[in-house]
Image (tube, rainbow over the protein chains, first blue to last red):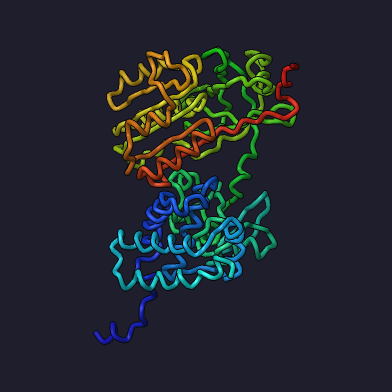
Length: 129
Length: 333
C-alpha cells in the first residue's frame, strides 16, 4: 500500500489508456470531424489514411502522449487553412468533437478536461496568432 | 551479435535497441520521418525479409501488416532484416508469355499470361507491364493457384498502351512484367466478417480474384459484389458472377447500370449509391473499392461515415495514364 502512495503519478496518456486508447479514438474522432458541416470543408480532397495518421498524432498529443510537435510545426501545418478562413469557431468545433469522442469512450470527465486543456494550448499556434 | 539492416542493396550495422530509423540515419541514409513516436506514419517502410514485431505496426492496415510494413522509428531489430521504402518495392522483372486473348465486351479484353516461376502475389494485387521504358499497372484477376495471370484491359480512346496490349500483342509473345503489389487482397483474419465489394469498369478484375480467394479460404460471412457501368455493354462476367452466387449462398452479385433508363436486368444507378442503399450501416464490415478514382474516394468517405473502420476500407483507385499529346484532337468545326 505504501508503494502505491509513493509511486510517481501516472501520466494522463497512461491513465487514458495509451496507444490502444488513441487507436480506439481515431476513427470516432475523425468520423465526427468529417460529419461536422462547420469544419469538414477543410478536409476535402485529402488522403484519408494520411489524415487519420495526423488525427492520431493530434490525439496522442492531446492525451499527453509522446510527440515532437513544436508551436512552429503547428503554425506551418495550418497556415494554408488559416489563409482559407480557419478561425476560432472552427477550433471550437474541433474541441467539441474531441470532448464528444472521449465521452463516447467513457473517459472520466476529469481526464477529458485535462486533454481539453492540452489541446486548447495549441489554439494560437494553429490559428497563426 | 551484430545486427545488420540491408537497404537498397547495401548493408548497415546497427546497435541492439537502435531503431531502423535511427540506425539508417546514423549511416547517412535519408528516411522520411516526422514525429519519431510511431504516430504520424511518415517513416513507413517495408521489410522484405526478417521478422517484424507487432509493436512496430501499431495503427497500420491489416493488409499492410501482412505484407511486412512497419514504422521505422518503432522497429528495433533483434536480427538481420532487409527493408525498403514503401514505393520502392517494385524491383524485380519477370517474363510472361501471352497464352490467351479474349474480348469480354466492346471495350474490355481479357489477356492471360503464363505465370512466371517465382512470381508471388495475392489475389487482388496489381503489377506493371513494361514496354520500351513505359509501363502501366494492371490488376490480376486470377488466383495464385492458377497457372496463368489474368488481366482485364480497357481500351481508352487515344490510350496507346492499352491499344498495343489489346490489338498489337499476339498470343505467344513475351511481355516484361514487374512484381505484384497493393493492399487490396483477402485476409482470412475473420471468416464471418461481412464483405462489401464495389467496382466500376475493370475494377472488377481484382475483385474476381479476391472473391474467389475468400471463398477458397473458407469465408463464411456475407459477400456482396456491386459492379457498375454507364451502360450494360460496359459490364462483363455477369454469367460468371451469377454462377458464383448460385453456388455459394453467402455471395450476392448486383450488376448496376447508371446511364440507361431502359435497363431492365441490372440495378439502375451507380454501384456505390446502390450499395449504400442496400447497406446503409457498415459497422464491422470490410470494404473493397476498385476502379474509377472518383467513385473509390467518394465511397471511402461514405463508407467511413457509415461506420466502417478506416482500416477495413481497402481501396484500389485506377489512375488512367493518357499522355497529353495522345488525347484525341478536338473535331474541327
